Length: 222
Image: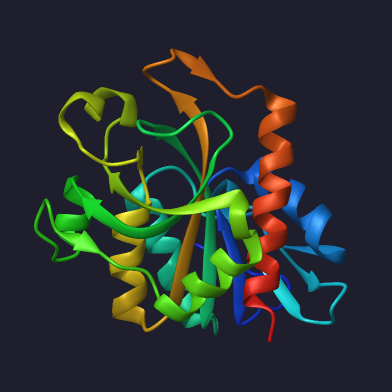
């Protein structure tokens, strides 16, 4: 039995990973027909069900930050996960509020990635085939970018990084996925802009979450 998750329903071979339990519920209602809660241990809400296309899908909350996400991914892999797409949020540097960003590479800048064997400053790549499928599903609505992943709040690092956006999970999650041989791609929503000192309104954020989730589900199909 995994150390953190206590599944009460099957875990699909494909999953959409989100940090926030509320986003897990929102996407479960959007993407799955008659979703069943498959985990509530430690507040890591998860849902299992079948998409309208007939594919089994898990929606899993990973908690905040790289360490939590990497641990949850390990549990999911133990339970049969083979491929996943992270639908997360980020702080935009060269991006506007509401932009959808498909990650081409993530630069490790925090200790959580270093703990997984990656030196700070190293660029980590997602699964290329899954990333291409995700980009194809989003088309002109998203662009392929470089991001950086940090352990403190992203806004504190904006001045010294030349990337499109900053988040708190992607690099360590990609490192862990490679170790586990789990195919992983990432789409991020720009929910904050330090330079504009603004955040995306709740309704607008939920609309972008749904759009990113639909694209992730389609890319994972089959």
